[in-house]
Image (cartoon, rainbow, N blue to C red; front, top):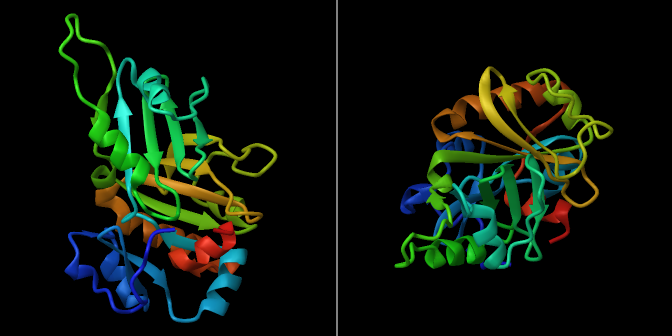
Length: 245
């Protein structure tokens, strides 16, 4: 697991990499730590209550953690050569040995999310390894996509998550219809989103990704939708505890 500074010592504005909604998180009492040079909301001041909330329904902001993407002809083949385990089906998330998650959004498009450790090892290695060769005709290996800048990354946890999403999204996300690893590229709260089923340990969970410019809007929509279920914000520390890492 990545080293983290003492909770509360890190100020988001001291880091170039910080959440798209860090001001909102500060207003909610978030305490931040540094992971890989980024300021991450670790908790909101009451770990016991936060863990209970995460079991019921929690919303965590993972946007400062590393992620990357590759797109274009040859992408899946090149990533497989680099050691990733990617199956043939699109709209499916493939768990990697280190805990990273490879989201196959299309036959030639992969979005890679780091593990909750946040080391950035695999995304960083892939970004450094990618380069055009000198051969002619040039080998097709896709091209990088800067997903850390283009997309926010939220995690929703809790047994009532699918019921909450039913208020803002038309896709049936109930367990019998939306298995672990399933991906929906759909609309939620009237904006385009990527929703991936990714449980945290035994706790049902989803990752939500969309345009970073709309991070504040989606955060508020999710908080509002989960209010009737007693849900609310949780930090990375609680998410790690739920996941058992």
